[in-house]
Length: 64
Image (cartoon, rainbow, N blue to C red; front, top):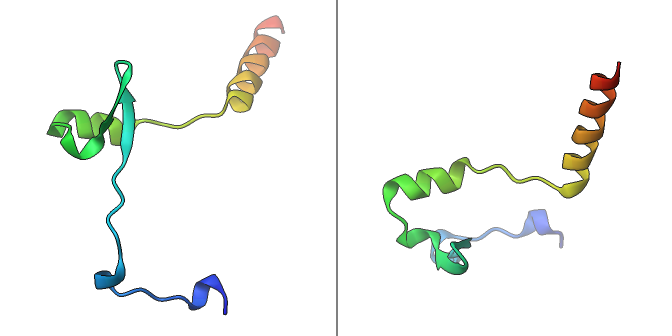
């Protein structure tokens, strides 16, 4: 049996609550107002490696 073979009915699923850090403490996104929820979902994730590589590329292009 593989992961693809597993099928769940909606009645078998469990709601997953998403928490995020806001102003130094953690809070569930479900308690945000409409505007703050929209802001949360518009966020873009990044990794430090990608951010550093972009910075190095920008510096290399500026040196030309």
